[in-house]
Image (cartoon, rainbow, N blue to C red; front, side, top):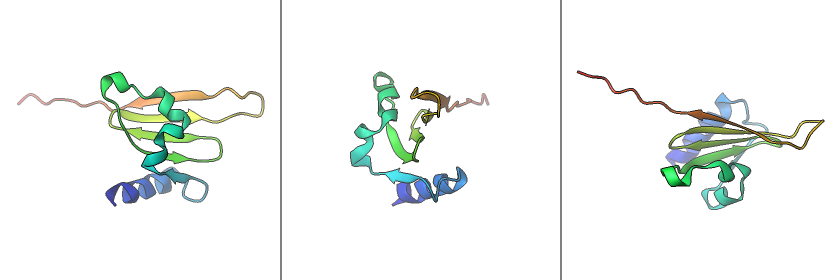
Length: 90
């Protein structure tokens, strides 16, 4: 339930609520972004938002944006935005 709420909030924030679709966890292995997950580092997909040409894959390590096809090329561009955690020394 919390995943669906967070997914809807993310879709609204990214402006995808009208054109994006939240992908069900059972279909995570069918999205293009699954090919770029660092399984050896324990990365797991939390949820995926897919539009006609883009995918936004939210993981425990960051956000993957699989940029869609352009008019000139079928090439897909993957942008990774890793989360960083700072430890405070007290």
